[in-house]
Image (cartoon, helix red, strand yellow):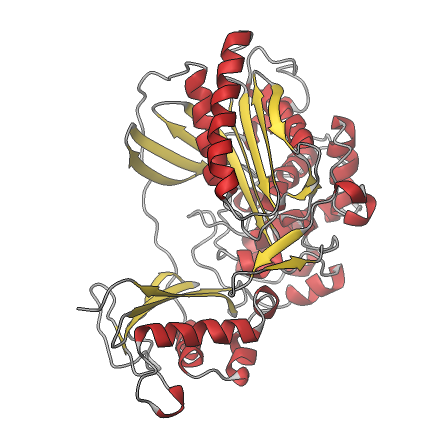
Length: 502
C-alpha cells in the first residue's frame, strides 16, 4: 500500500492520537513515549527522542546478529548451520545434556524446551562471562523436548548472545552496535547507559505494594544483555522497523536480492506456531518468528510485534507490513502494559487507511506432550505455601531465585502475604497468625487439607509453573508460582478472589 494519500495519513494520525490521548493520561506512569509510522514514515508521536530501556525488543537485534553470521554478513564468512546444536559452538555447555542439544533454530524460535523465566533472567543482565560460566555448570529444567513446543525463554536468547561472541570473537553488544545500530544511524541506541546522552535518558520506576513509586538504577551490560539490555528511542526504533519492512515489501527500497533481505524476511515469518483463538472477526493465529511474534488474522492479515518488560520499563513495537504502518509505545514503569495501547493504536491506523484482507483459511497446530513437574518442584510449591502461611527467612533463603529480593524487598512481600491472609480470614482465631485455610482441588484431581509433601491440590500448567487455591472463612486465596530455569522460585503471585466461598 505504497503512496498513501495525505488525506489517509491525516485520518490515521487523527484517530491514533485521539485514542492514545484518551487512554494514556489515565495511567499513573511517570513518562510515556509513542510514535506512529504510516507508509514507512514517522508521522506523529510524543517524546520520540527520549531514551528508554527497550527490554525484550532487544531480541530482534540478537536474532538479526545470529542470522547475519549465518549469511556471512557478520564475522568471518558464512557457515553457521541453524540446525546445529548450541553445544557445537559453545564449549561451556558441550557436556550439558539437553541444554547442549538445543539447536540454534530452536533457541531463535523459542522452542528449546526451557521454561519461561522473565523475573529471574531480567535480573541477570549484568553478570560477567565468568558468572555465566558458573551458571552453565548446572543442569537447567526443561519443560518439553527441544524442537517440539513453544515456550518463551530469555535463557535461550542469552545463549544466542554467547553464540555470537563465540563465533565472532567479539563482545555481543559490540557486534550489535557496530554491525546494526551504527550502519542504520541509530545514534541514540546502545547497551551502556554511561555512553548515552544523560539528559535524554529516562529513569525507570517500580510501584511498591503500598502504591508509591521507587526509582530503579540502570543495570550495566553483561552476559545476559542479548535478552533485553538495549536502550533506544521511538525515532530510532522506527528506523529499525522501517528496515524490517523494506525486506518484506515488494516495492520497498531494499534490494529483494540484497544480502540482508533474506535474514530480515526470515525473522518476520511464522517459525513456531503456538496459539489459535477465535476473535469477533474470526480466527487469529499466533506464532514466533526469529526474535519477533507473528500474528495472522482475517481482518489485517500479517502483524509483527514484540513487547519489552524490564525492572523500571515496559515497551511494545508493532507493525503492519501491508500498509507499512507501525506503532511504538514505551513507559518507565516495571512491566508497563504497552502492548494494550500499541495494539489498539495500530488497529485504528489500519482501519483509517481502509485496509481489510479478504477471508483466508486458518490452520491449527497440534498439541505436544510437555514434561511433568519433578518431585523437587512439588516440594518447592509446598515450601512456598508454608512461607505464605508462616513467614520464615530460612525458607525464603532456601527457595528464592536471585531476582526475588530485588523485585520486592522481603518486608513488602511479607506484608503482602499477611494482607492476603487477613482478607480471606485465614488468620482468624489462630495463635501467632497461622493460616487455617483448606486447599481447593484442581480440576479432575484429588484434594487434601493442605498441600502436603505430595503436592496435592496443585495444578501444573508446565513443569515450572504451578497454581493452587486456598479457601478461608471470608474468601479464596489464589497462588501462582513460577520456577527459574534452575528450579528456584522466580515469581509468586498471591491474589484474593472476590466473593465469599461457596
